Image (cartoon, rainbow, N blue to C red; front, side, top):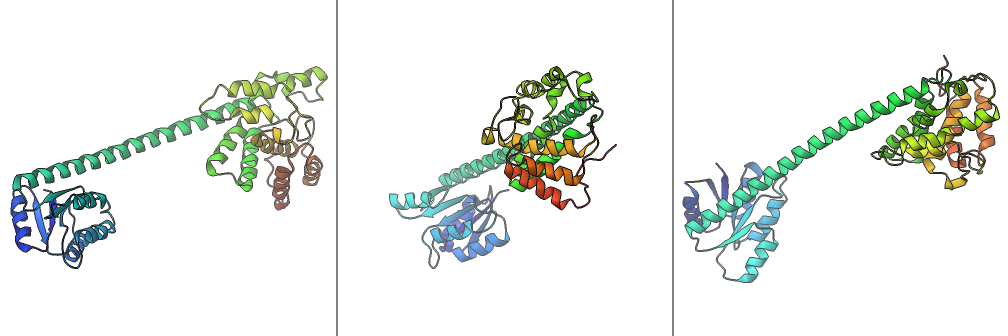
Length: 341
């Protein structure tokens, strides 16, 4: 049974209203605004019938105090007023009352108003609860979709790396290095997730390059190198079809561009190169130098650092090169590089 608090300094009026509601509701009385606040701080109520004109603390002041009680910000309040004044009615509604009713109170009108307000309040709460329930359901579905998407990304990344026995784990490491560079640069968690995904798939275009070229132990000839240089465009073509992840194709498309404009496939220069591609470009080069390849062994940390310094402002964006250099300098025992098998 709904609980209703009747607040009126006129004890006779409060008891009269209490009797009008007794058959359908649990009704309680308070003789002043202060008493009402004390009651509501201890007990629950589904509706407050609040007299406007009371000594010490009138109805408007009492309503403000009620709204300050945690959990009662939306408690429905029905004002009681003996004044036949449209300004009072407007003031009641502007103060946040659900409705108002005139004194002397007509029993049937009171019961209808109370019933109507309680029903609306119940419907609103049920709607809010349902919205929250559906929102949670959508969030869970989105989490599942994100998990499935990442699992597919990792699977695709592993498929690409299976083509090259010398670069096992390359895409994973590039993704991690790229994410750390971006984190230090100030990316949000959401953006860092995008960097991770883009890094994992930056070499997806190699799926269209013959295995004989990818695994060749010697230097590529001009024709073979021309085929290898097609992998950024191939990768972009594959990833552009994935519309659910914005800009996922950018890393694959332009991670071989150079800051001085001498890279490929489009010869972009400086900040013409998308930022995420400039980040991946540094991370990709670092992993290439710190991993064993078909044509050479792992470079020393000193040599890697020297190459990054030499490429600063030519091959690499100087900002991201500096972040990579700081990461190298912090790596006293050369543990940042991938494990060598």
